[in-house]
Image (cartoon, rainbow, N blue to C red):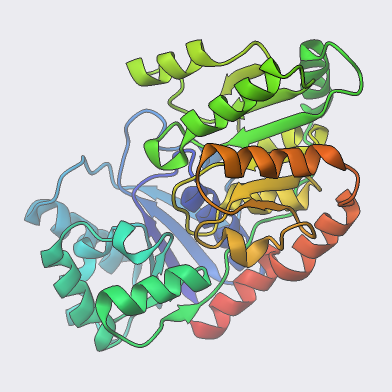
Length: 361
């Protein structure tokens, strides 16, 4: 099949990382795969170096904002490619409404990378989306049980096809030794437990809770190192306030393309989000054998069984997340790294995920 993956950009986010992984795997399986993005602003091609040779890349250079000229440019680009499949990610579907109505020979899909209400721009768009979803002109795909339930509730339609996210297996890169030396330089003791948080700075990720809980552990005399990886921690007043608030055992490292190297040297992975779809960073942690300690939101509870494949806080608040961390610290070796890696391979590999997409395509 000729498959177009349509997404705003390849900036450093979970959906963007997923698009690259899925495209690479589909191309390995013999399909003609094209990644088409809208934006040409700084950072829009962050993951482009990770695209393999079998995948074609196109940047339409469309600025932010919605308008007919932008819609026509998308239609012209897609029409010139004559695809069999157009697979949309995030909220790009308004750009293909007209094209989907006109081109019945093409199958259109839309993966909802979050709960349904966080994947639609307005009430008016919701009504239009419902028209297309109901008639299978654009076919929705959810990524977790919660996102599927939220889709059915919001759109008042039967549940969508559910395909859990997948991720390529994490391997050490050529920079692993440098990363190991860097992380070792932050340690005051050799037996220090190393935690990693991978997420952009954003209110939904609830980093204030993360820092508050670890600050409290520091005040109690707990020995640890927390590495914070992602963009946005040096670009706003609120982010600066967060960094100033953080204790000396919390290090902000910025964006990294080789996140896997940091996960491979770490012991545990932390997420304190208010809401999630099915985080790619969580799957990366499992692949690396990094024990996840997360809030019980979105697809996270589909992935983690508390005390078996990680630890879950009952609520999104200080006491609950603190208790989850203490549960891990009380017995850090009770969940084996090899078990997590095996669990990832059996459930969330990109090969398994791509096969499910090929089947529905």
